[in-house]
Figure 1: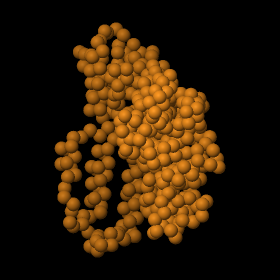
Figure 2: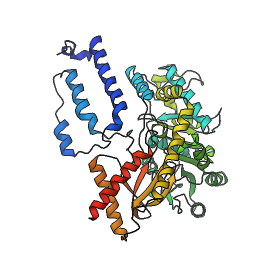
Figure 3: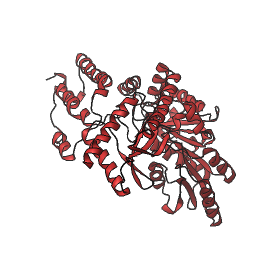
Figure 4: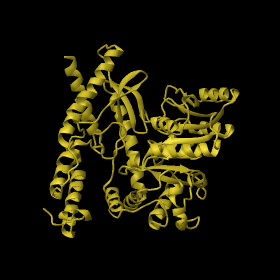
Amino acid sequence: MSKNLNNTHKLQLNKEEMKNYGYQVIDSIVDHFDTEHLKKPVAYASREEMDTLFNIEAPEKETNFQDVLDFVVKEVLPNSNIVSHPKSYSFVPGPSNYVSVMADTLATGFNVFSGGWAASPAAAELEIVTMNWLLKLFKFPKKKGGGIFTSGGSMANLTALVTARRQRCGDDFSKAIIYMSDQAHSSNIKAIRVLGFKKEQVRIIPTDIAFKMAINKLKNAIAKDRLKGLQPFCIIASAGTTNTGSVDPLDEIAAICKTEKLWFHVDGAYGGAAVLSKKGKLLLKGIEKADSLTIDPHKWLFQPYEMGCLLVRNHKWLSKTFSEKPEYLRDIEGNTSEINFYDHGIQLTRRFRALKFYMSMKTFGLEAFKTAISYSIDLTENVEAYLRKSSNWEVISPATLAVINFRYNPIEMAFSEKKLDVLNQHISQKILESREALLVTTILQNQIVLRMCLINPRTTLNDIKDTLALCESIAKNSMS
């Protein structure tokens, strides 16, 4: 037992113990990065099994730190999905990078407070610098534009809608109406509910055959609300829906917002980063016209959790919405160029998120990020071509921003729609139980389909072919 641990009120290890502990932690992380492709990507366990492993009362006495670390490495980490695994295809994978992981370690180890300039000028400055990088990438105004790093897209969307409401509605939003498509991310609905809007103040606009917001139906909805004496104030467009990767017609929506004097928010949490690729840039035409834009660096900019981001055309919108001046902060306000990011968003206490983005971008260079994103888009198009050449697979939603939806439907056999739904759900379930790949279903056009999101630059076409072969084997066994 460590002598230091007997003096528990200091919560310290000695220098040698810290070094030894740290080396073991780093060794575990390095080994994980080096061997994750050899592991099973899926953690499959019941609540009962987890309770058996972990559910104990808080210990009154100390435990040897080595024993605690060994237990975590052996039992906790293996019971989590490996979202950066090459065969993690579902939801939105989290293909992190080692440099950013180490940056997060530094930021956490030094316990940097990234709320205000006085607490850490360097942290605030790096957030300004990296925010300017993103403003330039998305062609937002260089001098007036601004933004803030958040925990993720959900908080970025919430921050955007708070700002939009303040700028367009003031204190009275009882007649305010928000528009979004039936493919918009659920975080937007959650944000609207948190803000106190009623269900009747939200218009869900149907999508067309390509899962994009139907412009004529949007125009009709706005016109009807005007005639009713209501106050249309915000349109939420999707730049890469989670289900299909579809991008709403941003240019057309921007024009409507300009004519109708509405706030134009683009939720690009998933697909926004594709602007770094040539193909993505074409699909995202008009994104630069948004009043506010959500992106998630912990998705397609390869950062570890948590890191979302909100960009706005005018940084003053944020400070006018969120700035408060309590007495205990009056001595650290600084001048107007020294940004206190707690004045630009909801959080006062903020971790140093900018460091990982800064260090990884400096280390690998922007070109590497562009290449990685382009690779994912091309890979998904290659997967679509492979599926279309097979007699077993049917493409339901084509490759769009590295998302593709398909189902097992062999042409030599006639299945009812109900039977196909059951079969494809069965394939997904058996794949998960095998732990060989993370592949789950979604529902499109009232059909249960398999969905792949392929933003991991370490995923190969052979990885996908292996998974599809396993799916086919499962399907054939189920029918025999």
